[in-house]
Length: 369
Ligand SMILES: Nc1ncnc2c1ncn2[C@@H]1O[C@H](COP(=O)(O)OP(=O)(O)O)[C@@H](O)[C@H]1O
Ligand SMILES: [Mg+2]
Image (cartoon, rainbow, N blue to C red; front, top):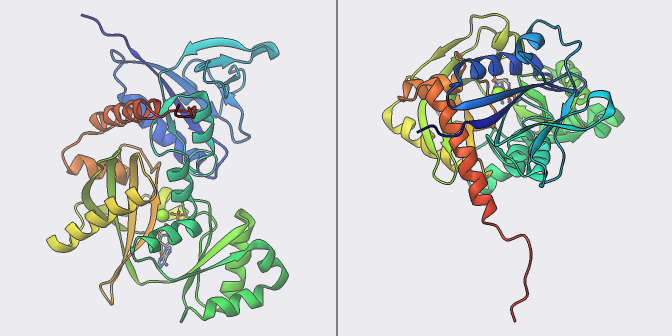
């Protein structure tokens, strides 16, 4: 018996600072998709936000040779869950789509905006929905949600770009109330450490505030913790499970963009050397945090573990974490007994499961007679 292949749209690239990281993640995903099970459509999103389809799109993006690829799009119309070509200014259906795997990190991919479009189109998609993605992305709102659930986060101050531009000294005064230097300044909505600074003194702090404010309207400033960085992978919809923990060994003073992607020397320690009881506690908190933001499909939950006090803080949840074969998210599952290819299959199955659940929701209010 032959079963129908699942029509899978893989999205990559995108407008965020993590465009290149996304291409690496997508290349790994595309390599393991079983051609007997999936009919795959590759769509690359340029740094300007144009959607391009065609043949071997990933190679064209990786080699910076995207000229000539046909423009494609999705419509916010639930009666047309198809990929359309935009050639010659005309909309032409190219393919029916069953499920979308957005292998996109950061802004416009991992922050709920793309998820909103996919909801309107009424397609199944891998990963968190609109709220989970948005709350996972926003470092300010995220802390409030964690605190509401009694999950420890590093004490922080939030400042608007407008406040920083008008009176950075006043913002710095407010930050210094948190305690002693160092502080970390971060744009609320970004990833891969872009715009993140470690500030050792007031001059650093003023510079860090301005740097972060370049990338977002809101800036979060945290007390620096002398921390080990522990990460846990979570997988599932309503009954998520946690992987073994891993530890990051950054090649620099902290886990910067260069340390993440360029040095090639930041180490991953799997499993992280932690006591059994702390491992179990962090796994439980990771699942709790995932549920608190209404996570779905997957997320990597990152902790800071204070070397001096032994206290842990939940640093962030990444709803579309780095996904190359050597990235922490899949590596942790491998160590927990799930291979990279099995993980990709599982995520696609979870996307379909979530869509089926969504389809049970009544959209029209019918007055009881
Ligand atoms: N409060 C903090 N104390 C110590 N190190 C931190 C703190 N906040 C961030 N860092 C360091 O900066 C890195 C990037 O910050 P993070 O909040 O994870 O942002 P991103 O979303 O860009 O990954 C972390 O991996 C860690 O190395
Ligand atoms: Mg991080």
